[in-house]
Image 1 (cartoon, rainbow, N blue to C red):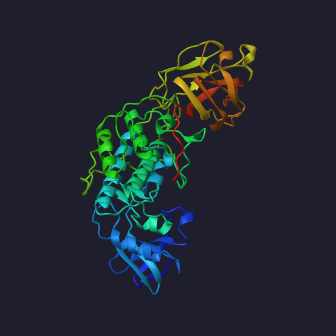
Image 2: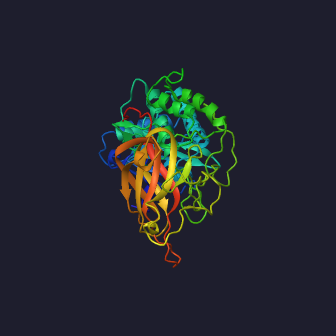
Image 3: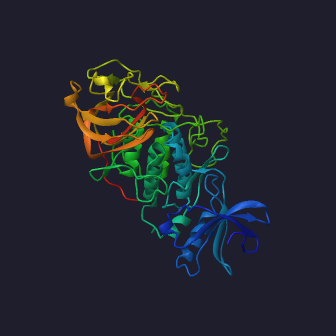
Length: 468
């Protein structure tokens, strides 16, 4: 179909990943195309022959075409002609939110700015009596020069068969809250998250963002709860409209974010040596509820600043209360939680055998989580050589090894290892305990444990289950 022409002037170029989940496109296709008359790149939505909701989709496109907010993708044409029904829209350059999150979550300030701008665009639409009702991580694009762009206003909902509701503002508020959750955690709290993994569940409830990733302030977590669940939090009423979302996020976007360490969690990586990197993200600024956003300079690099836990270039970990300890059958010595160096890794002593030369029974790292945390899985990055045996131990006391129960065992192959904790277990102190050491890779015949990164996932106060 590439090379085919629509209406004699739009030459199809590339098939695009859809903004609507595949099971809800009903055979329609999204393409980029070359407008041979005006020499510009456009997007073409082609509806299948006999599509029963073609009239609704075209009507939604016609209504959206009357809006002029630059944060909303423009509609150029919508027609049910001899070639079938199609819609021609602006195709803005930029990165979808799903692409921005490929390297991990955004910083809190970035997330607040991005979603506040999206909320401002939808506030404009709502003032004109229109709504989106089908927001996904591919509905929002960011370009460092032009800023935020929302695509699919009204069209995607009509295409997917999402019915209009009496309170369309609430539906879009819920959608914005899901986008904010995704921006903060790189997980999706609903059924249709495209490439994003689903938000972790505990006892049938979705973990709030602040308990999934360290560093999210309480007031930002509160915005998600107020908007997604309709909760009254800290004396603030539920958020029920995009305009209220703008107001709630505007203050946050202007604050300097201070990490609030609840769990150990990786923050997005930065590209230092061929690792995946995130496209440039928005600088914190004050969003507006309607009208064009002020011109913003294009950042030359992501504005987050990753922390390093004695690790390799690009890793990032938050550590609780500087309580990362080297344990050698007793409390041992303190290891710095964050040294801002890409050249250091926590390492045990060197031993002549994998079983510590019969000098001890184990060695490892202990983390004080600050309070009792329910852990569902962990990710550790160890040395490149296989051969280690590792236990995850968890408990509410660090008085002795026996006070920390074994919740998982693994023999990591080297590098990054995912460790499920099933069933989920709760405790304040987490111990990464080596009972067998891997060999060094220098031909010395000695053995040593090495840990570059520790990431835990879990909940303190899970949220009720959400659909969407």
